[in-house]
Amino acid sequence: MYGFYNKLSTEVYDLDKPIGHSFGDIEYYSDRLKGVEGRILEPAVGTGRVMIPLIESGYQVDGMDLSADMLELCKDHCEARGIPTRLFQGSMHTMSIDEQYEAIILPAGSFLLIENREQATQALNNFYKHLKPGGKLIIDTFLTTDFEQGRIQTSEWMTLDGDVITLDRKLVEVDFVKQFTVSHHKYEKWHRQQFVEAELERFPLKWYGVEEFKFMLKEVGFEDIVISADYQYGVEPTNCEQTMTYEAYKR
Image (tube, rainbow, N blue to C red; front, top):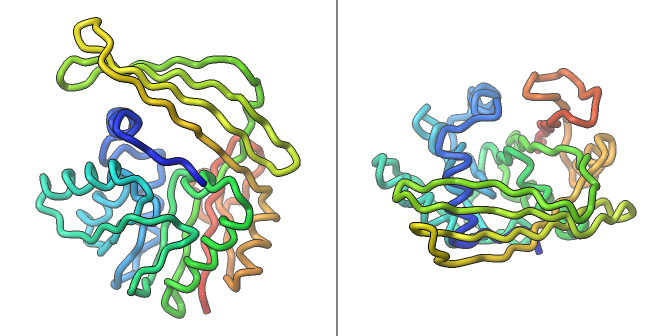
């Protein structure tokens, strides 16, 4: 099973990556979706960081996520802006929506939260089934480069109410054969220096080689695959620190 955001982790995500916060992906996806007039699906929509700016630019985007907390906050953000959209709760490898889309998008490496190769393949099959003929899939991946187990990294955020949320991240497992890592996350919330609540999270992250992932897309049936590095269309990746974006079509 892949990452499941709960209350505190959702709050931290929204503080750290608010609506419209871009890694270069919002501008890139908006440009690569030009000409798409029908509905688009974002299967790991989160709080709506990418979906809401795309809707505000005129695209019709539906959102899906495994986390009920993420979807609830996404709904609140949409309602606050008067944005109509459709949201579904579900997982990528079991999704079944009564709709075929002109495009499916997965920015920011969300696909890599699926640690099981079989479920990842099933997810790609589901994306293919939910695309119209001629529809495109745009999906980000990246390579894991930090393998230092046991080191704890701490981050801190302040909420609008003045509360403090801390996050301790510790890498506890590295599997080079199956190509995934597992980190343990511990969230703590403090109000006026008094402890309020805590939340634990198991955070898996898988990685794929460039040719490996291209082969997986081809096996599912995708064609005309273009790989781009750091949101520069058609510029092939040259080092392990870059974000890789795959664009592929259902013919």
